[in-house]
Length: 259
Image (cartoon, rainbow, N blue to C red; front, side, top):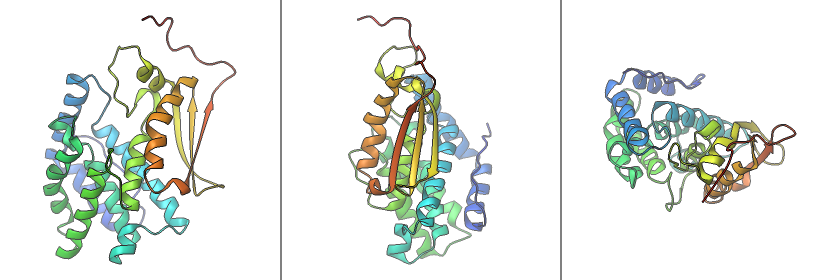
């Protein structure tokens, strides 16, 4: 099965090369399918496959580009004297592979993911980077993968971005807090309350994340997941989150809740 993957690579030819490699990699596409079989069919959770990684990659790229425009230095630039375009490669690759460990198990999937991602990363970088550069980028990508879940703390700007971008895939029931389909609880109700997530250039801070909800239960998603990811990211001074409820009345999500 072939899945569609695209990000706006603009003039970044290295990123363009990565995207083309991803598009034609049938083994990766099969692994994405396996991730969703494990997550959706076997665990009853939300999507962890190709749609999710595409959303995360695009969100991560947008977050990074806004921060760079506001003169925030990516860690690969600060510590290794590489370029902003290399930071884009890091966040996109980490987004692509951050949930690959789901083919093994939900618990510890970020740890399994670093081993599974290694062969793909090396292959994608082979023609466009020197051996030393490949080692550096691989190191940064693997750190971003393994630190996208708590309790690990991301130690780079790029890893922090991927951690936050992962949490932003929450529109219309696509919650990153796992909930079982058909089960009525605060996880399910809050997930279904999130209507739209927008990443914008901010005024008070460089980035504004605007979240539109149909019901105030959506606050649970923001408080339990997004808030904690931002607070523990090192980027909290750059991000402002605004949540609003649409319409004059809240949309009814369930008819009755009984214990």
